[in-house]
Structure formats: structure tokens, C-alpha cells
Image 1 (cartoon, rainbow, N blue to C red):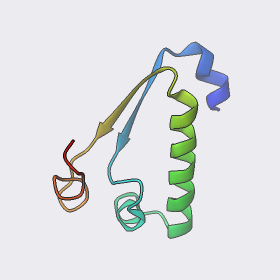
Image 2: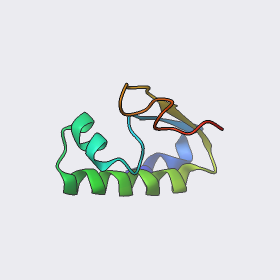
Image 3: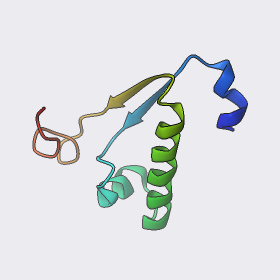
Image 4: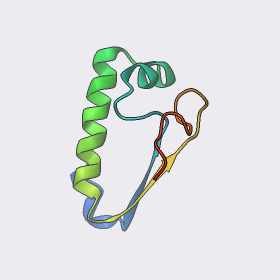
Amino acid sequence: MLEEVYDNVDGFVIEVKAKFDDIDGIMELTDLSRDKSEQYLQDLTRFIDIVKDKWLRIWVRVIPDYINTGTIPDG
């Protein structure tokens, strides 16, 4: 599907709810199984690699215990 719209859009926005290496957090926040969460993260990483040459905004939703100053290093 990305191939169908890629040339027709100027940019992309995605929202991240947990760190990419936090499979348990992704599972809990998305209600996906471990296998589906791992596939989701692989697909999301591949998507970012494909669209990074276009305008890309990644929103980080701060959810206590998942994304906060303790789980994301400063700087």
C-alpha cells in the first residue's frame, strides 16, 4: 500500500507509544501478541527507513512507565 501513495504525499506522521525495544510495552499498549508485536516493530522500522527521505514527523506519546524521562535518555 505504501508504494501506491508514496509519490502522492509530501510527508508522513506516526505516533510512537513505547520504545522500539520494549516488546512487552508494545504488547500491552496495542493488545497484540508477542509475534504480532515483533512483526509490527519490524514493519514500522522498515516504513521509517523507506519514508525518511520525505518529510517525517514522529510523535512520541508520553505514557508513564513506558515513555518518560527514565526510559528515554536525555540528549
